[in-house]
Image 1 (tube, helix red, strand yellow):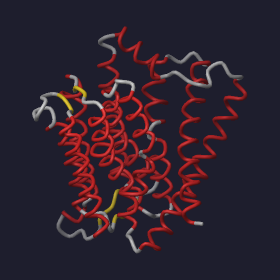
Image 2: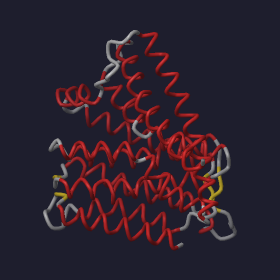
Image 3: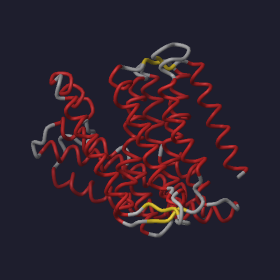
Length: 324
């Protein structure tokens, strides 16, 4: 039954996130909100909805290791698994804005989370935690980052509007507004119910397999909540638009570290017991590896060699986790 509830909960999470974003976009467009704002808020946050709901529910039920492990694991999978698979299917270039702003922000966010979460590095403190004050600080950094994103997009209005129109296409456009609200409410209920079912099954499976909550959250839970990014990346590569995967991964990773951990720890502070420095270090290494690819093999480009290296790193780290 645990396996059934695990996959059923994951399915509800993914379906709920998809239809919540689509219905919210259609409702916002009916309210005459610009596609530019919709793309930055509803679409941007919506792609991280599975991780957000799992982390909030983990924090509320005092399972801090799952909340943190879900985010760290998602970021590690996004880089080594998703970008690795994408580059193997079709190599792609890295644009200047990603090199100068987005990739460094991703590295900085990973380092910041490691410093905030490892209180035991300070003499006299024996317990690691993410407090409400830490959460507020992460959200403040996230707001500053979003402000820079908005300013950057405003430099080229035509390109910004074209990107926004593409990002905010909804399969529910044109539907009756009452139906849209019903779909949004049902999607939110699916996210909440699916998140609870998914978490409960994951915790039960961890006990059955003799694994810590940290390990199962970094592996199984993280891959499950990263499925939307993985599917999007594969489809983008097959349609010969693989660079979309890099933008999605970098954006998702920054959202995960600053917004999701910020919201979840602001809602309820939590302690961390089985997440160790190796896990934080891997999240930082993942962010650094994106930067390193700018200068290796095909410069300023993700090529197939780097794709295979990324996949090998992910397999190696997962093997280490299972042995741990």
